[in-house]
Image (cartoon, rainbow, N blue to C red; front, side, top):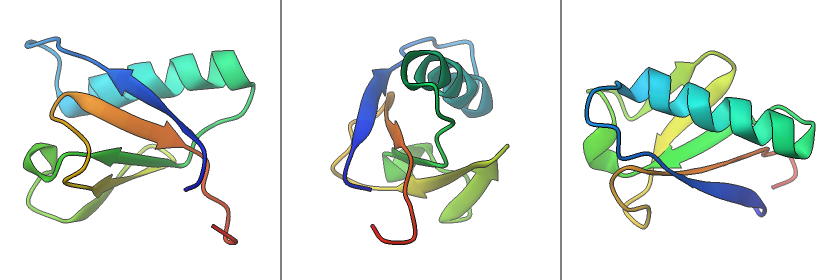
Length: 78
């Protein structure tokens, strides 16, 4: 993914799916395009390394700080 949006969500009550959905909703409203990829810190991932939350593929990346989400659209060419 070459271009994306960094989203921070420090809500201690909301779970990962709710936080990702907030980021998706904002991204869609701002860019008029649905994201399909979201990178999070590996400590936030469930047991699997990759996971889908709706149409968004969730991937671990140690460069992303906890409670931050690097979200965007990744085409097959990226």
